[in-house]
Structure formats: structure tokens, C-alpha cells
Length: 111
Image (cartoon, rainbow, N blue to C red; front, side):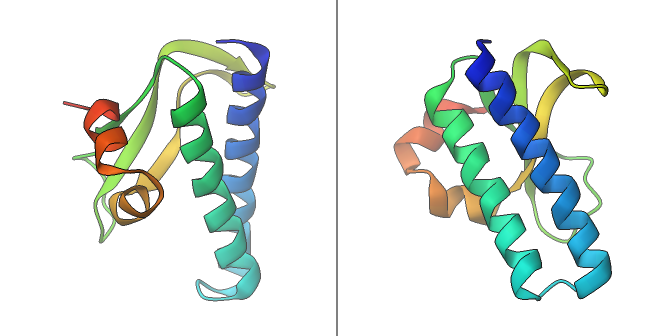
């Protein structure tokens, strides 16, 4: 994956961490929490649209109340000091269905 894709994944991970911290500090429905969550999802949609080797897999092991896709990478990439990653966090199915067209989803979802 080219540098722009790696940087985008880094941004997704940073937004995900910030979102989780905001949830703990301000609650699930605070404006900052919702903004961080939505920005992460928009970056994930951008990654899925603009870079090859990125796809969605339904996470059947998730313990959340709603179904989630895992944004998967065909090739592991180095991420800052975190080591190698093969994913770009989770994306709720309901949000993926809002941000991506049915045609896009049909191409991006893998079993």
C-alpha cells in the first residue's frame, strides 16, 4: 500500500483511540464523541473507496450490541510504533450502509 493509504490508516487508528477516550470522559452522546466517531467512519469509507487491497468482513466474534464490519487489509502494514496491522478498526454495519452504496458494499464485503 502506498504512503497515502498508510497515513490514512494511521489517522483512522488515532481517531478511534480519541473516540474511545472521549466516550469515557464525556459519554457516548457528547458532541465531541459523536464527531470523532463520525470522522473515523468517513476516513474508513475513504480508505475503502480509494485504495485497493482493503475490504470488509463481518466480525462474528464481536461482543457489541450491533453488527460490525472489520476493515481488513490484504497486506500487513507497519503502523508507527504499534507494529504491523492487518486491519483499520471496526465499522458498524448501519454506518457502512449509510456511507457506501449497495454496489460498493457488494464489491467490498468478503466472507
